[in-house]
Length: 436
Ligand code: UGA
Image (cartoon, rainbow, N blue to C red; front, side, top):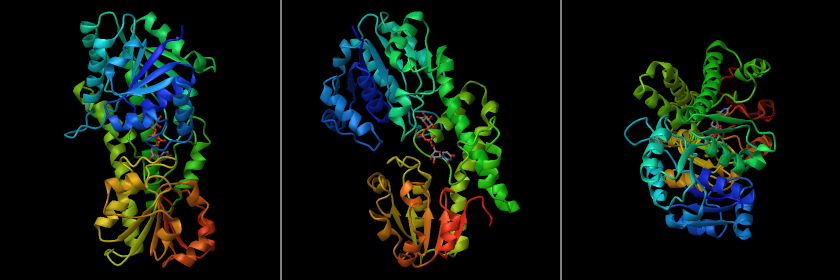
């Protein structure tokens, strides 16, 4: 008999995991306290944008294998419970807020059947799994807890879940590992590397990976600053160092830096946890990684002021992109939206376009101007700011934009546009880390 699964928390991670596990043939029940979201998911409608997940969700709901509920008691049938709730940054510091993880484990504990396994997927500070397991065993000694960090990227969520580049499980028994191997059998059959670790190492793998990625981005953005000071070109530099396979050319895209619901809060929570553990010094470099990242936003604003004027009140600025990255409608800690808001606060007339994120952006910054059409957004603009590298923006014809905009000035905050093409059409083109 195939195992039955529950997924606690139907946000980005939980919804993706639930739909993907259902597509592997498991009966899956998704649980969340948000009744409106559960109603929407039960109709097979995805509450956020993620390529490919909308159709998968709809298919799986229609298949009858995937159901959603707000009633925690309905997980009683399941053999394995994936905890996928959020761990946002605390309101009063850098640490992660574990309220949702703790309350969801507590909510399912009374319903755990003998031999069932609770599997944490949320990103948590090291030591959380151990303490949750101890608590769990006190009230449900017939169950167990493992940790299985998630490495999915927004925009590639389905692909990263069904074809991940590794599976990491933190377990304390062979039985727990065997159950996880059984669930992931079709993924393992693809040759996916399987790493068994203890609980703290499994938790650390996740934050170490995100810290490394953040470091890579801030490294290239630091090089961009040096290139600007020295008259160099960071895009050429990145290409040249990237040919060394030890460095690699991915995640070396200089620009306005990283945002989203993961990298920024994960490096901060990691620092806070290291300090608690007495290992503060080991992660002090992450303070600098964070500072370089936030400085990139300020550097764009400096370029805007240098190009237009210190006083921005007379200018219309068209901002292309609000999402923290392309192929996502997520605006959490989005560098693009942060810059747009700062320019608005400085008195500029800012109009933001994004193919998918306008609704979320408007909720966060209702006073900003928004436009559903690129043409309308750029019409009459003194300056265009390219801040999220959607494919649509790379496909723009600068000659057409010339006929709409007031000025012929563009700043590429993502180093993704064809500079020569824009210059050939008569545009003054600036980019971060390129002096020419
Ligand atoms: C990130 C990790 O890449 C995933 O492996 C991880 O599972 C996930 O966090 C998570 O912890 O859940 P994600 O937040 O979807 O995934 O976004 P990334 O693709 O990592 O991009 C993060 C930010 O870095 C974006 O704002 C992007 O624009 C920026 N970035 C990325 C750069 O500025 N330069 C680059 O070269 C690459």
